[in-house]
Amino acid sequence: MTSQKRASSDGSSTSSPRISVRVDHGRCIASGRCVRVLPEVFFQTEEGFASAKERPAPQCYERVRSAADECPASAIIIGEE
Amino acid sequence: MSRESATMNVDFFSREIAQDPYPTLERIRAQGPIVWNDLMKSWMVTSDALCRKTMLAFSKFTHEGTIGEQLFGMDAIICLTDKERHDRLRAVWSVAFQPATLQRKLSGTIRECVLRLLAPVEERLRAGESVEVFRKFCRDIPAYIIAEMLGMPNHMRQSLVEWSDAMAEEASAEGNPVAPQFIASQNAKAAFAKYLEEQIDERRRKPGEDLISQIVQSDIGKSMSTVELMQNCRQLLFAGNETTARWLSNSIVVLGKFPDVRRHVLEAPSRLPAVLEEIMRWDPTVQADPRMTKGEPVEMGGVELRDGQHIYLLFGAANRDPARHENPDRFDIHRQQKGHLGFGFGMHNCLGQSLARLEAAIAIGLFLECIPNYEFAGEIDYGTSFLVRGPQTVPIALA
Image 1 (cartoon, each protein chain N blue to C red):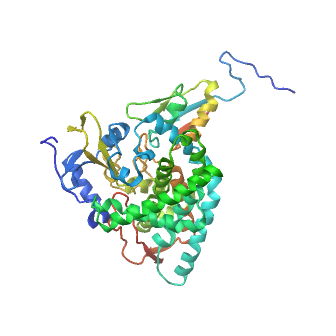
Image 2 (cartoon, one colour):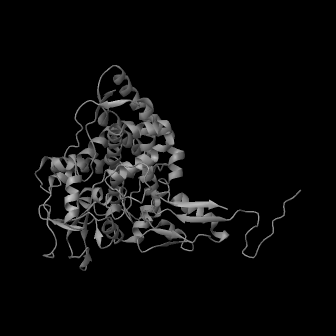
Image 3 (tube, one colour):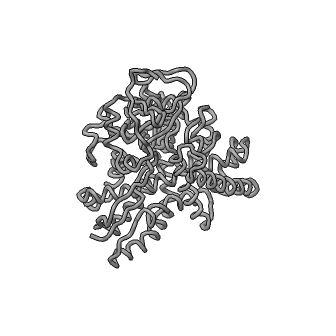
């Protein structure tokens, strides 16, 4: 039986899990890398820490995972829903 | 300098401050968040918030004109203030230093290195002898690994340790060009430069997979002179050497002083990374980051700083700032970590921090596994090194 993947209005496949992103300020060392790589999702707070838009658009997911891999302090936490 | 600001003269190169800086750091903090040191002719910052603010303003508070530039050269990445250039240069090596990459590529090598060094230590301990573990265990581990990453052959690793050790003493010469430490450091830097320039030339002709090849072959690397490339390679080799070795020896000392914490780790080894992180907060290796102000006057903690003033960011104090950390003087492995400055902050944060963490977790993990019950067999000595601080004589015996 083939699985049907319907495209929803935001272009995502409804069979892939949604992810949530946050930055752990207990680990973040303000390298600015995530902000540089993916400014659609990450931004720098006044304190210098990075923060994330909690629910990024699905087309950003791969880049969010890259940002998490590249974070020198392993401060980007990705949750699957 | 503002006449209202407090002054406290602290000798950063005394034995006392190296042995135990914390009473002094609290006396400095009590004077204010930024205090003038007339002996060192520099400001001292103990406030966590001010340290972070300073490190974020990387073009106003630079490493130009500091011991950093003296040691590494003005084209070394830590001295760069041009963000574009800095980011392009750092991007070349960032890939190799990503946590997952390091885990995958180097865990095996680190493990082998650690076990090889541990075997004779364990043997001597079981024979009833005492062993000094900084030189016999801690010191060579980071040197071995960074040398491997740069494609340096086995026979050069001892030189790497000697040259790095000599460079680490330069700060204590306090700019005196006839001090023996100053001369020894110049010789080490020159020997390092000569060796690295030869390696750079060779990698241009025959590129490999190592970090020297990576930077030489990168787009930005192709636009850099041999000297510029050398300064960056030399900085990288030095940076991960002394610092990590002293985090390792400090961890052995702290775990020796807190046997309940040691038992806690032995019960569940997955607890070790959090313990190592709390050691780094409570007693960091890099105690002082030297910066110099550049450009228009800037206000910091109620003080006006003009161009060309020296500042020391005191991480040992900032990591115990009650404004950020509850019961900051307490070594508490269960605390919720609020972020420490042991690996810096902002643009120049430690490139090698994931490597340091991996080395520490593997080295101390295996050390505890093989030698769970040790006690100190003599005086623990920190020498006179404060800027990069850690125990350099750690004699232990089986308990």
